[in-house]
Length: 104
Image (cartoon, rainbow, N blue to C red; front, top):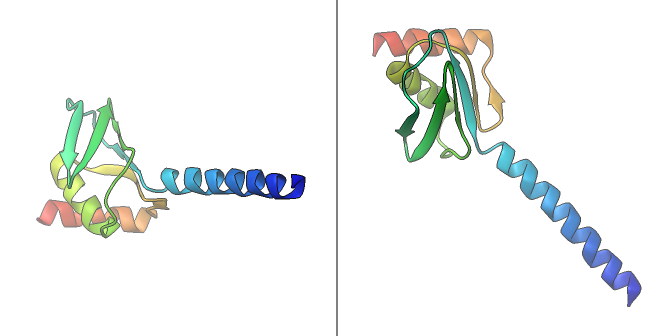
């Protein structure tokens, strides 16, 4: 009986850490080249909270990161860093995002 209880506790502990890891990859953040005056932005069903030149969202939709990057750059201005659902953009991907946002 003790072995069963110990196994159940261990399984719950592993499940909790897996859920925590999943939650951290469901959000997004970005940094802007220039400061923003916006405190919040609701975009694609997610609330982005901004302070100075950083915006974060705790949970975002599972949509293509490059599309979201382009649209946010179009709304907020040039981005200097972008991470979406655990995917950090490379400098090349970020440059393409900013260029596409200017052309849109």
